[in-house]
Length: 304
Image 1 (spheres, rainbow, N blue to C red):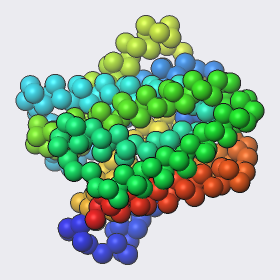
Image 2 (image 1 turned 90 degrees about the horizontal axis):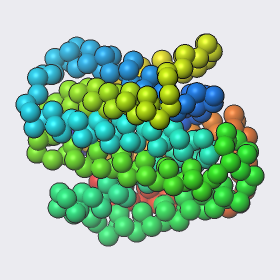
Image 3 (image 1 turned 135 degrees about the vertical axis):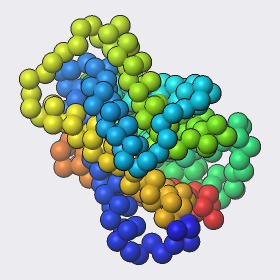
């Protein structure tokens, strides 16, 4: 179907709700992966399990897995920025900042995506997108200001909120770089699932080396909840959602699918409220409203 396909049918609504809900929940699940376990090793465990599963998905979808040398090189760059840099920074950021706030920050990923797309791919940036992005940034800034002022130990493991915000910001840039470089002509010639599978493999190898060098010998937690979290993040949060997401892109178009991020941050903030003792104020409520309104305005301009 084209991007003009009807959105009010189960083939669209069900995957839309599933991907938004699952991705919204993963931000909180990550907090259980970094409590007493080095974040770098948790990132490696997640993708060590997800990688073979994603290759299996590519095989089941009958996508080609043999890549040319330039395609492998691209996959390696995507893997390092997406499945290493992005997730390593995110996991470490959640040591200091409430998971829902990190999710809200990542809702602004569309901003560096547009800027890098303009610089490196020559993509047009609509004035409506700029206005909406500014509104969203102001809203998220309200949330971050409240997080900065609040008790740094409330709902988070560490206490340096400024460091957490910085780490999340670098993670956003890393994810954006991965998004842009995979959109070049070489990347578009490779089936998306195949590119992601190889990228995840390269990223996992990098994660292993990084964890070994920075976090010492691999730990083997005995907690059942820890390993259940790994399975959830690897298989449900990484493997199941990718085919659902890209099927949505095919069914209703990338512009409409991007609205899924609003559901994602809504679920993430709800979970933080219920399980991380996140306290709402007039400032944070206003910030959330502005953030969502700004995203809607920006996405409407981008998909229009």
